[in-house]
Amino acid sequence: MTTNDEIGRRVSANDVPLTEQRTSVAQRVGDLAQQRASVAHQLAAIEHQLGEVLADSAGIIRIDELAEFTDVPADDLTRWLDALKPAPAKRKKAPGTTSGTKRTVAERKPSTPPTPPPAKESAPRGPSERADHAGDMPERAMAQVS
Image (cartoon, rainbow, N blue to C red; front, side, top):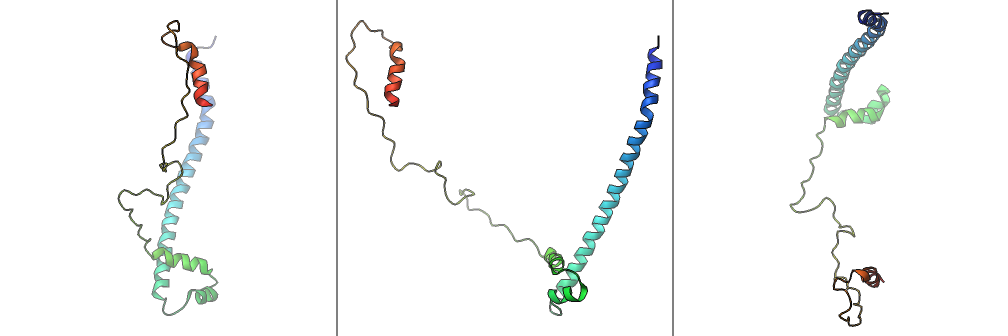
């Protein structure tokens, strides 16, 4: 019979190749992700420089002319220029207002209160009837619904 130590050794020997492959893949992905982050940072810096050059040259040459001369799409040139502009400030809401300007139907209050259903006249009850009237509950409930 195989001992527990021998079983552990066999399982470990079986797992080593898979563990090495997993480690290799994880390291490669980590390296590539770091390279990507570095290139993305460089690209952002270059796009910022492009925007500055475009802003400085606004009085000298138009975007459509630059696009024609450089074969760079006008949409790209415009995007780089617009990236320099600060985002428009958001307007603050007045105190006590909701996000919408109109109330939904469910939020509106009715102009007049709903009228209750007409009361059902019942016959006078005699002393033989039970005091709690539990037996006529469904009948009374149906009378109010209809």
